[in-house]
Image (cartoon, rainbow, N blue to C red):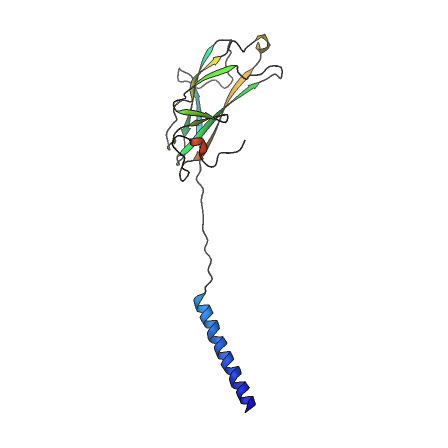
Amino acid sequence: MRKAKIFTVAIIAVIVSFFAQSTVAYYSAFGMAENVITSGNISFKIHEKTDKGTDFPRDGITVHPGDVVSKIVSIENVCKHPFYVRVKLVYGSESNLVSAEGCFKPNVDTENWIYHDGWYYYKGVVEPGATTPNVFTKVEMVSSVLSDAHRGKTLTLTVVAHAVQSENNPVSGTSTYTASGWPEE
């Protein structure tokens, strides 16, 4: 009789554990989902023109102290996504003996561009196919900075631009420099 009770208890335990496992399996499930995310592709073109509508010469031009040179710079959105854009002016010299800093004075459009941490940020969104207002249209060769040490030397003014998506990347007002994603220098 005792063996029969043990056998009965064992059978009941097996049946209860079977139902318990079925219940757990019924209330839990395992699944897997695969999500594909494709990032947007941002591309732009830097336009450097003269007041005659021609491309600014790649080899540069000869200038003298006090000259005002026509150099019209704008950025065109050539992709399918709107973006924020910033521009940096990098000054260079072929000689270690002279610096190009302060030699160039561009007439930056401060109505549409804001200067922050070494960059000029366009205050709006550049929509697909659109072009920004000109960053600047002229560059003055500052005669008070240029000296005989600069004579015959090559000085450069290079325009560098970065863009970040504006979709799902809000900013406060025209503070586009607060957008997420600007590359570190």
